Length: 542
Image (tube, rainbow, N blue to C red):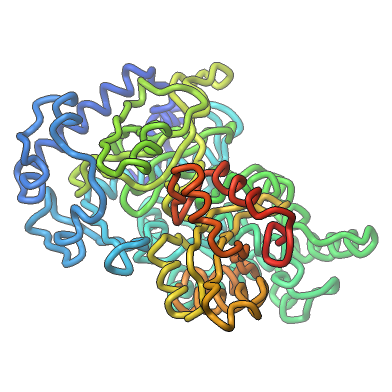
């Protein structure tokens, strides 16, 4: 029976229990499911060449042995199998292969196989998220077949591109633009056309990347036809209901001297957003749309991994997507200081509220990744939520690991990318380090602290602005995702701070601490800026 048939034939309580019943689990019940599924995955892995390679210390007989015998892994441990798509090495036959950026890797992208069982779990969890996005309380939801959906997520072969194909057999949804049209367009064209179709015909659900939604929301006037009076091309073919809404909203905006907001036009049943900077945009999106977005957690390797509940105040991880382990902040920071150190992991029932953790996953149901470091940091918000009668931990996404700078969910910058850009630019830059900072609106940018080579005769004539413009050109040329930030969001996320020659060496000599090239702790940055003395051109004054 499809999801649409269930909506027509089954009681709402039965549908809720099937898709959202995991929210009723106690933590011991949740851990029983986790432990059973990970040992099933161990059995599958033990029978394939990839698993036999990873189980070189012996096949685990229980969860404790699994965490002791199997090392923590990164994509480098799988690259020779997954990049050439060697299916004979895997625990189950893939149905589809997805791609994502391999930041700092030897190749531009990573690949992840999805089995039929993984896709079944992915579909069920996406439907659960759809239900929860329309819910105002436990057991209550409003999902309608034939709903109009503005869809603004990355296309295949990225994980979000699977969403329409997985949903189509389960329920009729009218995507704007249609999936067939969208796949012929650039991401920016897809978003602009989707908005115009939504203005013409209305919409019920919104699935999109939070940073793109934020950019489009701020430019709704132009996306809706341009200017206060709209355009004839937009008005032609508009439904009477939406025409009345638009003209009324435009009249109020002109009268009150305000900008057109999405909440003036649309009354959404559900609003789902994804992206690593979602927390930065949620309050503004809620104000603009009149409905708080529901956040999803996931990625190419883990698939759809978690969702917020009806309260939209914290993520809960699905028990059947991955087996979860967590590296505490003090452990992964110790590893940064001593790369030979192996950090300790904790399980879901061993966490401390308020603490930050690096996520480690084992993909279930025939997936390829064991004890895999995704590179994401989450904070455990609470161990349980009595108000919602939830007995499971809830999380918020914090950021990528310190060695990766993620900007608006679009581009992930590592030491390797920055070194390449500096080399290509041929600028006389000596020591440098980069950190992620936030502007007055809470939006992220890359701050590159750079010393100019004092022996270069042209260094004295280089200002901060010249350096910034020059490096930005090379970032856009070298990194297509970085280029999309400018094209889609109208932002250039690079700031440059010029340091006096010898500053980094002087800091290391004085403190004995090495300055990490990417993600230096805040106290190191402040200490170095203090050594600079009063702000001057290219110094603290940015």
